[in-house]
Image (cartoon, rainbow, N blue to C red; front, side, top):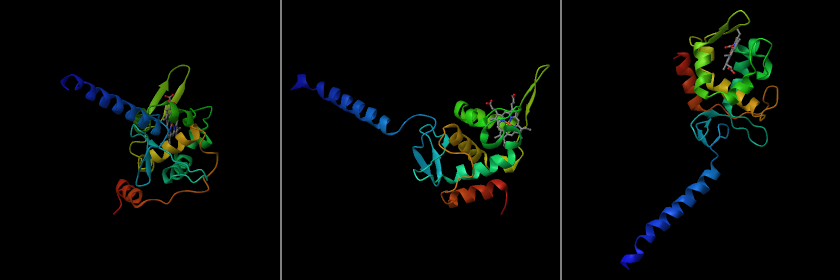
Length: 176
Ligand code: HEC
C-alpha cells in the first residue's frame, strides 16, 4: 500500500494538466477573441477591450459608438474607416499590431516625427472628453475593421447600450 501512494498525485497532476489544456482550447488567448462580457463590454483573455459581432451582423455597442466617434474625431487625418491617408497611418492595422496600452498612450499624449524628411504630428487628445470618454469604443471599432470582422459603413444592427455603459459615459463627461 505504501509503495503505491506516490502514484496518486502523479495521476492527479496529469488529469489537471489535461483539463487545463482542454480549457485553453475553449478560450483562445489571442488579442482579438472576446472571452468575457461585462455589462455589454467585451474583453480578451488578457482583459484587453475587444469587439463582439454576432453571426447576423449585430455589433456590440462600443463598436457602433466607435464608428461614429472615429468619424467625428480621427478620420480627417487617418482616413475613412481606419484605412489611412497619405498623412497618417491606417489605424485599423495599428489596432491589431499595437499593444492596447501603447495605443492609449499615443492618443492621450500624442506623438511627433518632425525632421527634414517628415512633418508628422499626432495631436494629444488627453484633455478632450469627446475622445477620452470613447477611447475604448474607437479602439474596438478599429480592431473589428483590422480583423476584417466589420465591413465598411455604419453598422446596421447593434446591441442596446447597457446601463453600465450609460453611467460610465455620464461620469466621464462630468454631467450630473
Ligand atoms: C491632425 C491629424 C490627426 C488627427 C485628428 C488624429 N491623428 Fe492619430 N496620428 C496622426 C499622425 C500624423 C500620426 C503619425 C505620427 C507619427 O509619425 O509618429 C498619428 C498616429 C496615430 C497612432 C499611432 C499609429 C501607429 O501605428 O503607430 C494612433 C494610435 C493614433 N494616431 C490614433 C488616433 C486616434 C484614435 C484619433 C482620433 C481620436 C487620431 N489619431 C486623430 C495624425 C492625426
